[in-house]
Image (cartoon, rainbow, N blue to C red; front, side, top):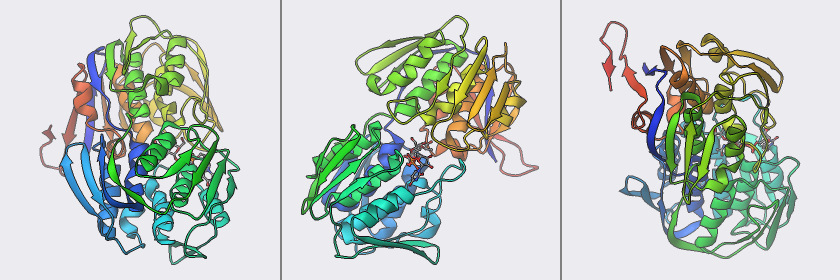
Length: 430
Ligand code: EPZ
């Protein structure tokens, strides 16, 4: 078993570099399927979700070459296979992007239903609604989603999303870049990674307008050709370290960020009494005094991100007064609350609302990461807590945070990875 052991109660000082955005990378890598030639993708985060999606492309027949730690060259020109391997695809939510990319490239796709964090139901009906409107037949047989463009190529049309969905917006975009005619996505998601995918595709020769607004127009082109592209910094990784400083105290320069993407997070930290100073490509976060209560509701971008909800909850546990947290995106994203309670947090959950009564201190405990962002929030709680916190199931955290232990140790946190191979053998510390 591998776990994180944190001795909490130390303020953080120094600088942290932010990696490339996970949720952009896991869409841009499958988008390489649409490109005729070599794509060089830079600023790729070294996380297990990225390794998985690269492995899936290789399994399909892509030539993937590592250029350096954060850069890969991907050549999908020779792929002839549109069936995605089941064991790999079921481990990751973003495998659904292979449906749109393969439909765009071959006019057909066979992809297992996606995996990923468990927040209650995670339907993909809006993705399918888009593919069907664009002339595909989609059904499920033998545990696979089978999608086939009736005309052999996707047909541009108007798609209105009933719900603002990041995945559906990006998946329909992928299936539309090589389609016949113009596709218009209405009520589209506006997240930074939606814009990043559009910028990547445009840099390879696509014709996409309006990404970042709620109407995206994609004029189909005959071919995309190779080029190089650098992925944006990770908004949520940056927000997580900002939250860590808010909880543990100290002063940290969070570097290689786009401050505009962080405004929704910065606004809430300011309300809580944390100082945040924007620089060109960095934010300086400083917390010395007490934390003040606030209310937070998660919403699609530019609202407060649901992927920061557990991390902000960790801070609110220590803020003076009563805070109300409302989850506006997922049905069940409070599964971590029981673990926080083991550390002394006072939280009541009723459906999508959590009422958090601030306490003077959290105390270290043995807790279990139940998903990616909840796991990151447990690290934050451990950094702020008195005593020792042990977090198990850290593979969830490593799906989305590159080198979290090294980055936090670099600003003075006492956090280690402890590996216990099996009962009876002595623990290794690394
Ligand atoms: C993406 O998931 C992210 N994952 C999630 O981040 C993030 O929480 C979410 O967007 C919202 O920002 C990736 O990018 C890989 P959605 P996605 O489609 O695309 C409903 C993380 O921690 N919905 O925007 O799957 C859905 O149930 C992960 O990095 C439908 O009803 O989310 C939810 O309530 C966790 N039908 C809402 O829309 C659909 O067809 C938003 O989901 C699709 C979604």
